[in-house]
Length: 586
Image (cartoon, helix red, strand yellow):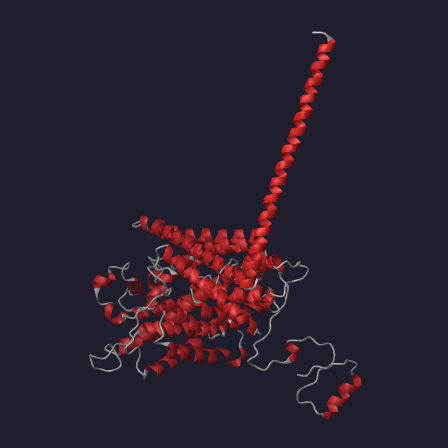
């Protein structure tokens, strides 16, 4: 082949390459144009959908509904995961029956591992995820900008850490209400940004509806935990907001109803329940739920719950101050949080070991089983004599409270031990809630009063055999609402108790006991549980407006301040010496 032929062949090949490149460019341009047409069509459809949705209602309402559904789904998924982990722990413990040492190790090391993982994971991913989160949410709702507490990493760290904490619930005795309120506000923050985008607004400054979304999220957090929408809204009013805007009422109820309905529907679809019903369904008698003379006993129960709440709050404030002043604990909590959690959880787990002191604290029961057993309407003092029932703890969870045949001794030991154990557990640097343990503690206190009254009068208030017997479960329900309400300085637990059980027969005594306990707990202007946490963390918060508060405690004024009882001479002196146009009065 000569040089001319080679040259022609090369030209032909180059021509083919050029044609191929041109064809490829045409194909790419056609592909991109088709994609652009599809994207434009999809965008046009989205705009039409947005217009249609906007014509029905404002976009905020769709975000409120989405907030309720998403939060309920997260709550249900968390409960499902925790239940699997608890079953695994119970299975491991039962498989080692007959080997006391191995059972002790499995009982203690399992929660130690979970809590250590919760502490390590949450602190490494987001240090802001530890604790309840309610004081921080209250601070954000008061107008303080805390973006780190609403970040996506904080949401992920708190969610995973809370699952590990709840899986150790048999020993650590912690709940999920507070952290889930925080999780709900994180979801609400992101939905608020989405709502801003859907409205076509630029997010130059915080959206006007951001505060409303966070207030609604606080109500949804409680509603998604218990399926209780009304008490969730009341909790948002009492705990989260010092000044609640009436315009947020309807969004709160709407989102809370969506969350509660979704949470209950998920329970039905997962075959946990046959139909929509209360989370802790009870069967109290409607004929004669309580005798009129028992109102006095419910009042005494409220006084007892108020006194115990004062003791608990004092111990809680003391332990918060102690861990901030003790040099060893300060160093450990600043550098070795995981080690502190492991040591403390091992101590708590050792004390609750079922083959030792744990058998007198019903340690084999989960927190849900504890509350369900305490709300039993039957009298333990009379049924504990039936040996066949005691030998079937799975069919009769309440039999765990009668290892010695006398439930009053077990309840008394439970109350004494859990008081200081719960105070210690509140110092763990991991995501945890503190409302549900307090609720169960109050139920145990009320159950003790009810069982003692039933023991004194085995056949009821009257000696007539035809009269209805005393219902200790009603006292447990009243004690749960009164004690938790006194600790948090709220009345929403009274309504929560009714929504949790679906009972309205004891509405009057429950509200009475809660009011009496609140009156005693608020006397002396003692801070509530969440106020004590805010003070300990030095978070800005508004004091309770139910009592007179000196202006100097709220405002740090550098100029003159007039006293309320100042006379004309003092007022004239301040006016002559001050250059300010406004002078505060206290």
